[in-house]
Length: 152
Length: 152
Image (cartoon, rainbow over all chains, first blue to last red; front, side, top):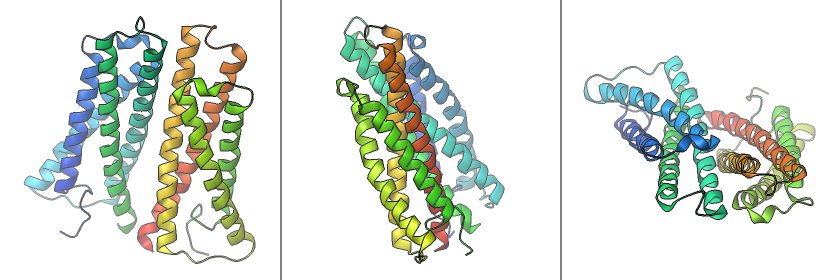
């Protein structure tokens, strides 16, 4: 197999998708479980974006698992284009949501403890960190597939 | 000339660089002129990032102008790689700074007028909008050059 490691259908891609699924789920859980996230726009944005990233990552994780363990699918230009487009949109949204969450948490910490009890702010920070990791892996997937695209 | 429009050395690239220069300068001016931006991390981040984007865009604007109006330079793989890398880093930083600024402004508006007089908040919003436009053009430049890269 002479394709680029990390591109669609390789074991590196499978690992990237697995990481995306884990980190985006962790980000969503840290934000949602027992925390009033709906009082700030940025936190709602993070929850919405992670709610889009998780099904996308899981779907591609399953397809990559099929390619790696059962039978390799051919690289079709149209499919790779769709994957690149989806990854690009979702990675930018993840970055935007992570940055918004991080900066809002920073402001809440600055304004005072009454707006942000320690337990909650720690969770917001962890959620933002997980979203950053998810963005990083999503961006890597996008770059590997984009690199493959002009050669198809 | 059979190169992709928008890639390094074309008139479309010149237009993109011009737009980046204009929008990033506007963002910096809206944030800096007569506004106390240094009291929030996100605003300092925006100023720093725009301070990096402006010289980068101006340099490439000059090179593109030379290519378009005087003499076309050959596409060297190493130079295009450096341009793609720089564009990618700066476009992600612009997006991060723009999102942070937008969400902090949103929070300040929500917390109350005492934190954010109308005149200042309007400026913050304009600055964030300009940073978003700069990110969009920077991202477009990056994609066009990245598309060119594997064919070199």
